[in-house]
Image (cartoon, rainbow, N blue to C red):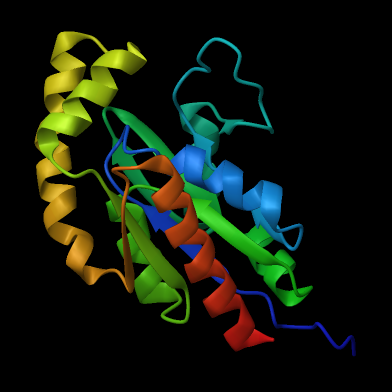
Length: 193
């Protein structure tokens, strides 16, 4: 048996759309070679520049349902009319091999993972305010006005769920948020090793 067997930690990063989860995770991945990103599956179409197997596993609705019926997902949720999920096989394999894995998922999915794997390290990233989040989403320019309205309504609920997570990071100043999330990773990964 390898010395690293079973020592990987699962990190669940969640928060409202547009809060900067992806930016924080990219910074973590660049600093910690032991950490790898779990690639989610989705039924939505790729956005410009997104690559299948790199950004997401883009699945047809029927394939997603077949895999769901087989129990292949650690978590899944329907978000804005599309389904998203985390395939459990690659995550469990990486953890068993001693690698740390980070999931970037919505609050619904994060709650499922926290129930299924209570040892997972949960981190909620929040904006200072809904107004700040709206400004970020508008600058991103990827949603229609109707989609933006739905995201902001959902964000209000998501922010109320933040208290269920082990750690909270407020993304007001990017450098401070990076420092906070890296400190959480270092502290929690030290506990496993």
